[in-house]
Length: 463
Image (cartoon, rainbow, N blue to C red):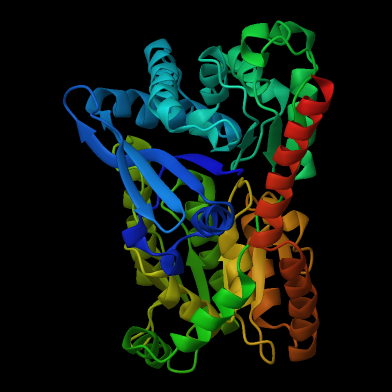
């Protein structure tokens, strides 16, 4: 019987619960419950010495298999190469980019460790699904160990243009490693084109036979836009609407229009420019003063990387400056919350908001944009202001699309959203909701797993 083996950098433990999980966890848990199988990855703990044995926890048809990481390995592999080399390259943010050879060496060693830990858990009929930029070399390591099962890879970030990718000294090694997979998936046609252009470059050294088991063809590559569970978002938004913290938030608005942003504290999310654009809204459209409130929720992330600490300090400074300039005795323009809220509460906040702000300077997909739309009241929906540089903009064309680098343009988009007539809001929302249902989380994982099963059939027929 075919099992699914999913591998990600971090594993959502059973105690987390699927109800509060994000998009990746929801999709993988549903696929694993359908097929049965293993979810393997790092457990979030670091140790001084060598990682111990893999910890196994069975819940129904799913085995959660997790491993520790050495503290130095974590620093070099995760905070190092993954997040100071690959992450800025993938998001076209070269000002935050740094490369150290020892960090890449550790990145390869951690992937080799994952492969060794995973090998004893594999069965002959398994299909293997690897997730995200942390684990690009994993298929290469598994192939060298003799694994012949179909292996797929899904990239949750953008895939950069080859001219940006060339900045990375080891880009050829990474491209060859991607060719060890049977199926490689991306969010958007743009990402797919960048990948295909890159592997067609003559100077990557050809496809490494050790990685491809002697096969000369490139991997199957396609677009698989990740979606959400629309009905779950709607249900959570309605059922959680009467919680005390949601009601308090609504009372404190005193009838004002609400703009909301929910983002990880990451420089790719464009939060500094968003704060400045909100200030520009109050400058350029003074009628909004004392009539709108902006809540930004941005929990801390990657606390070991200095760039993220600097973003937090800059946002705190800007919020104070903007509030000091525009606030009145009964009105604070920006409420900046550097903390996390559970998923049900966020859905309820979205439903109460008049405008959702999703303005990253680059993003693979951005599920917050989709969750905001799903959580709205169809009879009186809010308006999404969305960066055209987010993957979600490829599907949600009825959002108010903006360029996040144009502060006056973002302010114009906010004003357009705040003043949009009800009938236009309903029409836009309905069209976007139809797209969300067509490309939901079930369609995403079903299409990818079908592609992996087809790859296995093709290999069987050709052998």
